Length: 365
Image (cartoon, rainbow, N blue to C red; front, side, top):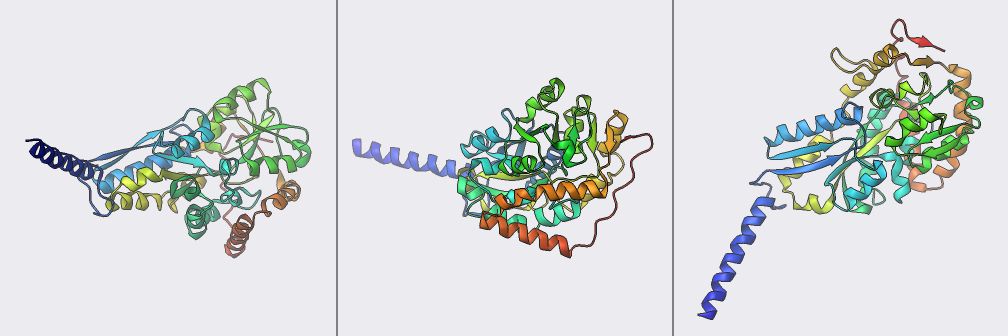
């Protein structure tokens, strides 16, 4: 009887294992039988371009899978990008859209070229880099997501960053000198802000409004979407409209242990959606929003933000001052190689179209 009992137990145990594998999906089978839900964290509001991009990613995955794979997006992630990075590595959350700027504080320089100062200054070039072979190479690099047990799915754009001044416009190196400028925890951004003559102050995004309000910082680098959705225009009055410092992408990643549990079919849905994170139509969304879309230029104009203009001479002086940051960036041969590739792509691209005129009635300085 004891032998028979052991046999029955073995059969039942094998059946349980088989059911479990079927529920999770066999990574070699190419199919799955039970729906899977993955959580995706990001640090901005849902109305920010990050939120709009991951909402489109979610919709794409769920449409392609017929609801068999669902994404639960989590905006305003507590603790900021640094905490989000740690949590996706530890599988506290399965997926994340993490600002590329903070990866160098975690031991990876692979994305630094994306935010080299005054290198990517228009959305057409940003789309070509983030959505093309350069972005793919960064995601696949052994010094990138795989180093931390993550799988890179794509890179989204959050909007070109501009100087935002609390009490005055930041249009020249003289305007930056001695100022305290908020930046994310990032070596590459800190190096540039220092090169411009200011003091970088690392603060998580949730602390920035109060810091601007009470004068802990004199300004920040921000895109128009961030200024509007986090209401920074209420406590900082001047954005330098014709200065684009760098883009602000986020790498969308998934914990590899979770990835390995997925079927080939499920992986395909995620890969496909990741390739569309920065489609060509996104360029229009930033530069010339279609009817019904959030038009951050108009919204901030209506809210009373002043649009300052540096002009050619001041832009050239800012770029010249920022060159000091390149020595630090180029010390890493992989980063230097990516910078060269982006420079070549920029040189080969046609000149970007002139930005649309400001809406009537906007304050200017």
